[in-house]
Amino acid sequence: MTKSQKPRLSRKQKERRQLLRSLFYTAGITGVALLGYLPVVGQWAKRLRPPGALVEKEFLSSCIKCGQCVQVCPVEAIKLADIEEGFGIGSPYIDARKQACDFSCDGLQCVLACPTGSLTHDIDYPAQTNMGVARLDKPKICLAMLGQGFKGKTRSDESAGKKYKGILRFEEISRWDPVLLADQEFDVEICDLCVRLCPIEIRANQCDAGKPPGGDQSQCPPRAIKLVEYENDGVKGMKPEILDGCVGCGVCEMVCPTNEPAIVIDINEDRGIGKNEWKPDASMIKAVKELGKGEGS
Amino acid sequence: MSAFVESVKVLFGAAPARPDKSKFSEETKAMHATKKFDPERIQAIHDELAEAKKLPQKWRRRRWATLIVINLLFVFSYWLDISVLEGALTASRFVGFHMADLNSALQVMLAYKVIVLNLVIGTITVFIMWWLLGGRTFCSWVCPYHLVAEWAESLHLYLVDKGWAKDHPFDRRTRTWFWFIFVILALVTGYTVYETISPTGILSRALIYGPGLALIWVALLLLFEIFYSRRAWCRYGCPIGLTYGLVGAISPFKVQYHLVDCLHEGECRKVCMVPHVLDTVIKGKANNLDVDIGADCTRCGRCVEVCPTESLTFTFKGIGDKL
Image (tube, rainbow over all chains, first blue to last red; front, side, top):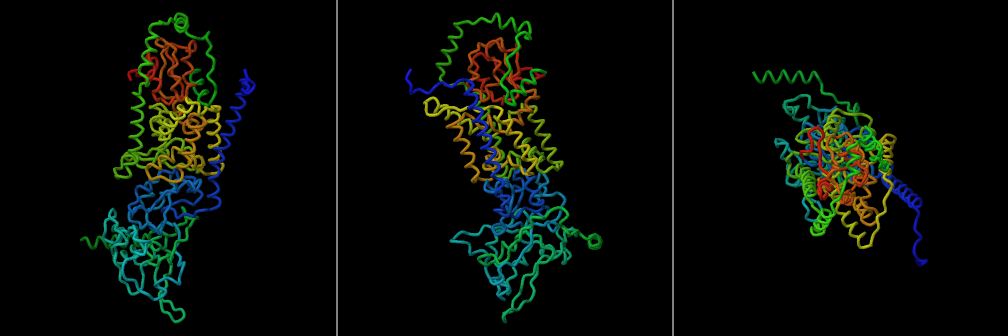
């Protein structure tokens, strides 16, 4: 036997090495898993969550990362987070500028699909959600503020030949057939896309016209956004004013025709059960039901 | 009862206990004592094995087909909108019925500390399903990581054969430590910490919703298994395996060992992913004529198909071994 050969390890030595190796393995894997806390505690990516999401901390605790909410969304607004979001891996979020939630499904399908109550089952209507609130981020480029109209297709500016793929369910269109936003022609004297396409405003308008969505007065929400007259340095324009009814769905951010959206959503991480002030007004519900009866007879 | 305790102990990582020969039944003792081997028959088996070159693949083919079909069912339910199996392996709906992976459900319950009815329904459904089907059956028949790890294992064995890699086994209790670590982390931090690194969840979501950076983590695990330690994740790491192992401990569906037919060739132990459960097939160790294989067994059927004497079979307790 030559001396260069490794000395044979005794059984005890082997066992000790194996135990040490196992401890390193355990520490390593646990360490990698715990690294997932960094993006969460550091808030590396603040995300707009789907309708009905619990307060951020509880939302991440309760989400089982299955993506059932992704699957039922008719406009495919919901995406799942990747590993760079740490403990948030596999949790659903909405990138409003790419594809906002337009409440196409009416009945909050994502909420119904959620198996863990991470999207709370305590809400029934779009207006009860509380994802965030819109804010006029860049008033200097807002067409309405500049007193300008808008003609043509919005978001056609999308970089180099790539057609914008965002979809919206416009009025009188089946919820399962939303159409491309980039195919819609607009011609307005003062740009009011954020108001006219707001899903909450659309519902409120339907209610005012005596035709609440689905004939259900409890779907009649308070107003979310309106244009008010505004004058600055002699320029007469209109200013988008955000009202109490705004739920932060992100449609205004999505449809805003400027290169960078003039209006954006401030994410509300404290959303959650009990945070939604709006309740369907019982007296209104009764009134409309009677109205319906009157029409029917 | 003692067989159950032993099975759970081995599941948690204990070495298989030395059987107490004084407690063997008379007929078992007799069988061990009088067992005579027919050299001609053994030679014939060896010749046959040498000639066949490749081991039988009957159950492996069925298993891979099942695993692939189930995962594709998830994929196509979303892609083609056929709504048969919606969601991912962590939680889903099978034609409308809630299903929740037991380990993911456990993590969520511990982290969130509120349990909604749908999750309870999903968890119970899945518990009953895997109780009937054998617990860790989930691992070898459904888990997508198991399949890629099986391919990585072949590569690892090839490298070892060529002398280019060496297997570094870990202490099997490591998986139990992991299980408790992730239970405690979920409870204390309030986050489903394990999901961050779960290759099962990551792969399932990648298949259904498209690939992402998380696949790099899965690739690293596979490289670790190919070059350093055989089946390191499934054997020593994965808490999901332990959770389903606990279900398997009380499951009526098992692999059963029959002492009468066994020639103690050891083919089964070579192919087994969890060979400690096959300790009983070693000459003189079986404490009964028929012995149930323990909880950690994934019911993959490799031992069943490679045994040249059919000494290992699938059994459903109460119905007999009609399978």
